[in-house]
Length: 176
Ligand code: FES
Image (tube, rainbow, N blue to C red):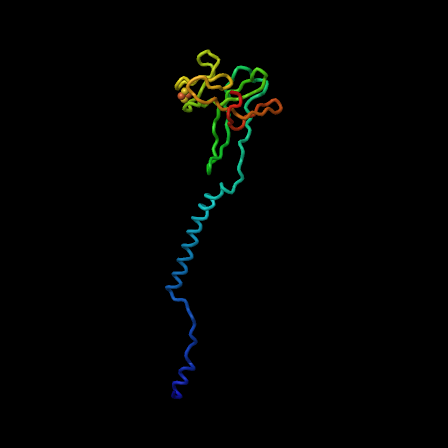
């Protein structure tokens, strides 16, 4: 090596690893894309998983009428319940027929016919029975199926507190 070459190599600039323009654009665009995708996907993941992590809730009791107003003649009451159906919360109107039995105990029947789900009504034909307008199913005051339907009407869970009647979830008929 000549003396001149030796001097040239001494004065060469130090090689640094610099980012190329192409790399810079790749990193910037990649980071921005990841940020945007994360922002869009994370709420969806949370939305999908959240109800599974939530504590299960039982059907709340709903105040429907004063105990003193319940008679042996079934009365129709309408009330609203909040429902959580998977990922959706909604308010649904429910109907119950409330009455007392011979011993004075209060019970409430669901009006949903056990044949094909129409709505039954009390005493529409003067027989002191529940009648279904769709295919003439009949039920006794206790909800026992008399014709057409194979099962008795369901009951509501009933609680009486401080002179007020509360209804809860639907249960199988305990009287028929
Ligand atoms: S749905 Fe009530 S009789 Fe058919």
